[in-house]
View 1 (cartoon, rainbow, N blue to C red):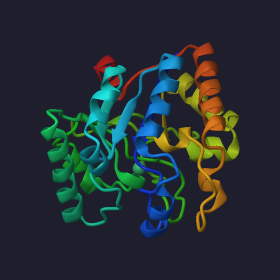
View 2 (cartoon, helix red, strand yellow; view 1 turned 30 degrees about the vertical axis):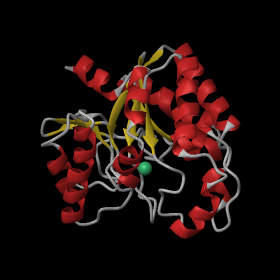
View 3 (tube, helix red, strand yellow; view 1 turned 120 degrees about the vertical axis):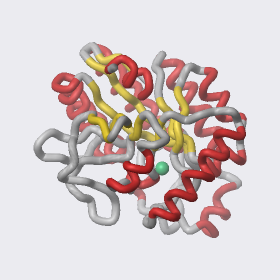
Length: 267
Ligand SMILES: [Zn+2]
């Protein structure tokens, strides 16, 4: 029926701007770390027999270079999730972050073929730059604009090309352009909502793109100053929902693929 592109952002739970770094230091010693989160994610995907694309944050890869081979050994693809998890509002900051990211990957002898911008904070100028370096990008959320977050209500919702680079937008509800293809929606609104939208897109376009984070697959405590919805249903609940989602989409004929595999089969 189509290809399910499950994409995973590999970053620490405190890399988001929602956290004050000093407060995060207080919790770091007893909340799971990126590698534990990654192990839990890889374990689940092996059990499910699926392949995925992992967008790895450059500064975290620099600290833990072994995660690159750990992910690739299981048959998954590794792409870049910038160097720092920032908005990179101006192009100078964006370009220097990109250079830094490449440096980390190249030191490890790896050429990432794909990119995802932190917070999906993408625009045309950035896409133009990315198209000189990458085969694909998955930074666009063509949904209604969610103030303070993301959303490009006038962008193409289908897989398309920007110059020669393939753009893989996160799947949104057709016409209404409601966002639904992230772990947050699954954990807060239930997996049926996400499944309905992905199944619809798989049927009409033959592909659906979903984004989750490694830190969602291990339990997170409530943390002072962080709203409850941020970590709601992480750990076992998330594992259960992704398992059900994958199994039910398989029942209607969906198969998992990495972004580059999908690009190659489209050529
Ligand atoms: Zn991210």
